[in-house]
Image (cartoon, rainbow, N blue to C red; front, side):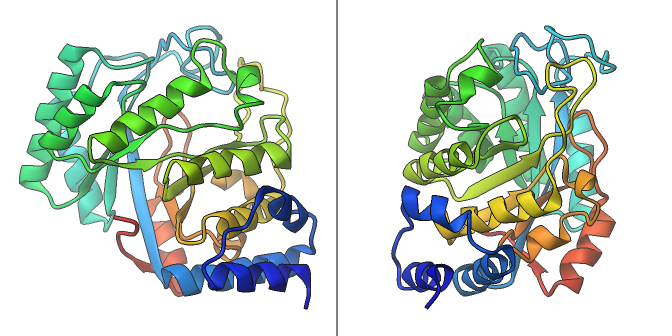
Length: 324
């Protein structure tokens, strides 16, 4: 029996793949790894495909120095747009538009280190209206908030909090210096303590190693994360990462497949940069991925919901909420 088959059987019997095993898996033949990861996905998750969209709820002039980000005030990029929190009417209309397209989750994302108390109050009113007027799930990405804020957000009707780890604890200081990995972990723990589910993954192609990617997902596993966004770096001119080479489709598929082995029942969610690989993520969806952020990203163009819906149906998936 090959090592990939051995690890697949271990996972299907309820075992956990360890760090050294994951590192070895990452070196195994790609096709075998992809097929085994897809078998695990089918067994553990069925044909459900969790599709969401994001809205740039507050844009630009971010105080943080994340080296990949077009909205950071530390860099000079083509993203010069800046605006405060969108109005309740704008957010509600966006939610309704996405629900009509068959989207299951609508995530409000805001720039900056964290929302203020007054901004949390404002957006809670928006969430209440969305839940009154639609049946779409509401997710939020509001920065490094405390448990008290998350309790208010949950009471308003949100169900999930997003806060990306971005990479491993070892590599994170090379990505950002204005907040810490520990602060991100505390944010996720606070959201969970408030009764919200959590969504946390990272960006591939920042200069990290496969070891860093595996350590990131192992940290997510320890935190009980069941929605893992996988972004592929889109090098933005004007940022420190503008000259990074985009990840190849093969490397993206290999990473996604290893992530499926590590958290076999998770929603492995293709996110930003998916359009850079040419096939809109199709190969990754055959390598264990079973979720996506559809539509435009925060400052870059994405893939339309209509295109994604056609693709997931072609691949035998069914749009449904997963990991509730």
